[in-house]
Image (cartoon, helix red, strand yellow):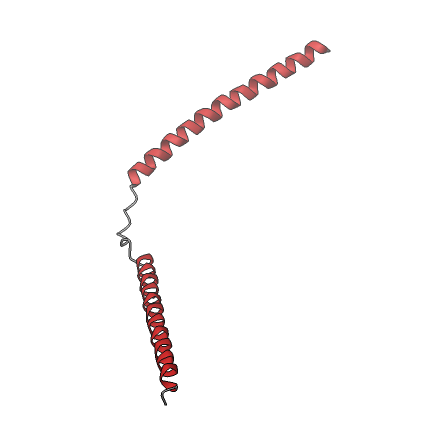
Length: 98
């Protein structure tokens, strides 16, 4: 029996060391799980709520549309005048060549 006591002490010592290592690994694992859980919760946090969309300002839209239409009309008038002049110049140049 005296021979088995040192072996028993070694086994008990090994068991206690393994138990301590397991507990430290388990506490580290549970800390990592808590960290990941809190990180996921932070990612899913509500940033803000959607408010009521503003009503369109009809007067402003109509004013902008009128201004754009006026500018487009002016551009078209000058462009058509340019085309007319170019056709006239082209016709005159053809007459001079003949």
